Image (cartoon, rainbow, N blue to C red):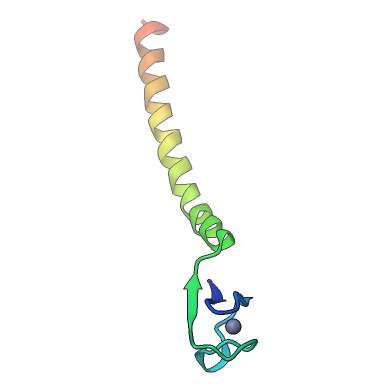
Length: 71
Ligand SMILES: [Zn+2]
């Protein structure tokens, strides 16, 4: 989470003290997700996605193998 002052574009990763910009004292603060946060969140899902992908591919390959290469 990034906190950005709308008036002077001061940016910090922590919440501003008392909810106001330390640089200009403005209360016009916008909290925004940085790219790092989004990336980390996406990485958390990846093991499950990989598991599902491996499972789907495994079933597909097993099906093709069973159909063409056995019996
Ligand atoms: Zn500011």
